[in-house]
Length: 255
Ligand code: IPD
Ligand code: CA
Ligand code: CA
Image (cartoon, rainbow, N blue to C red; front, side):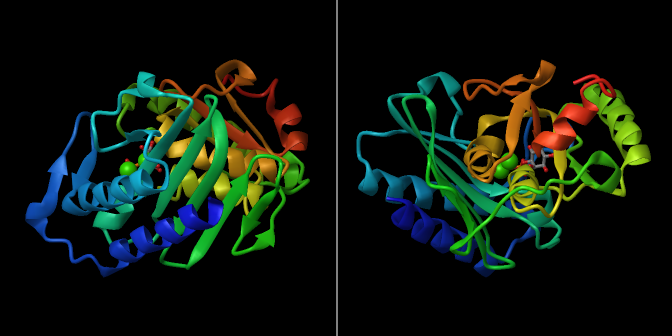
């Protein structure tokens, strides 16, 4: 199944690469700077149709289709057709396809594909995490040696003060900081040891479901506010980190 889903993610990623975006195919959604495009919709429809052929009785939750998070069934696909839509619109070339198969309400298979670098991150429960078929693992860096990434919760500006306060505290203790524009890739980068900690004060399950399994299978920890266990049925704060750094920052920031 993981191979089938990976193949599909690659095909969807190719659609992203082949797209020719026109100004009139970009639409605004609720909140500041929240966009969708004809390609977000087209790619999601393609993924939905193909996943339905793979497991016809699985439920489907996608960012672009009403998003009833309570529609979770025993088997459910949670999909973000383009994570990093603003990057996609601006041709920033840092976006991905994210597909998670949930089983018994927990991630079972996660696939995140960045077509611009041809990088496919994937994991299956209890089987480790991989980047282009090679095992990946989180770093063991301490905060003082870390590169931190974060998301700015752009559609929820009420989170801005807290976001930038936390970013400043961490920046002052770390080597440097990043804001790259795709939460799924940010979390996968922690899984691969490219960054050491990522946080964002509000995300939706399609942003983090697949990547959360890749991270935990790579030895990392994913948690929500209060450093509590993450939930997949509602929007929530997300932190992804190696264990060392997570212990070090608990008394430094409010999360
Ligand atoms: C967004 C990206 C961004 C994050 C936002 C997400 P989208 O997803 O992951 O990095 O900061 O919170 O909503 O809208 O591009 O799919
Ligand atoms: Ca997203
Ligand atoms: Ca999206």
